[in-house]
Length: 408
Image (cartoon, rainbow, N blue to C red; front, side):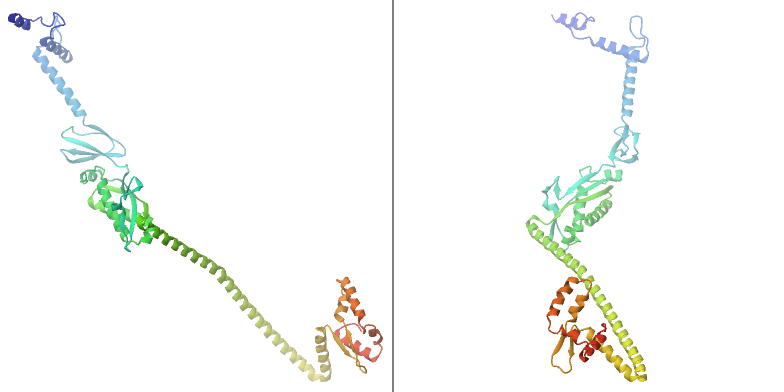
């Protein structure tokens, strides 16, 4: 039984008799050598066997395999750099060169390695909160102002890469995006800037100024570190007092707003009243000057007229006295609506309603004239007037009419 087993193992026809036996290894290597020989250009013999010896054919096949593997190894050094990226080639772990966008090649592993850095990607860090303003981080957001007030500041910083070499080699943080270093620099800078300003400035009108100052300080810190990062923008998301004193700050803000409102109303009232008062004062001054000029002119005119009358008076004193008397009586009597005539030889007084008579003769009031004539007719002296025109008293009355400028 043992001999049969040994004979079966040494049988050259083993593996050909049926599908139940194991494959012949010699036959497998023979077929592999034939295939490699065909690839290398060896001509097979009439029996289907290659011309060269099996050892030479195997050696040629191994060389081909090595060549293919070498080609693949060399081809692994090709890499593509995008337009918004730059490549940094490391040779045995140290910096070698920076490559521009396009198809590039470096020595394959393990001699050289290429790191691709995105220069236009905006990276962001948050200080004082996480993802949402409600998720506050008090140990980051609470800071002290110049007037010893505590304030809650939440901000975010956006940055990109300006120097890929410095970004890769000077970033000692475990985070490849340098978020940790930028965050620490941001905390330092914002506390410095807020600490230089008072709480009212930080809460109200100073947000833009604080963001600009913080961006400059952060950039200075990162430049001293040589991190190769450019700060693109600093966003102040929220500035408010701590929640414990928020109500008191709101009351103070409202009081300040009321103060400004009342001040503006007072200024508006002053702007309305002061110009009017100045205008009135200017008008009164002008009226006073005009009155002064008028009085002075009248006085000068009276003085000039008096001098002229005096010269005429010196020429004919009696005539001038009569004329002056008549002029004065005309002025006095023209301003009076009642005339009293003294009848010589009698004790009765005659009352003449000249104002009513003048209204009766006016053309614009015919109805008033008829109404005014009734009380005039009721006077006892009315029928006497025509009778006294012919006597001495009538002549006196007529003379008075001449003085008043009426008809004789």
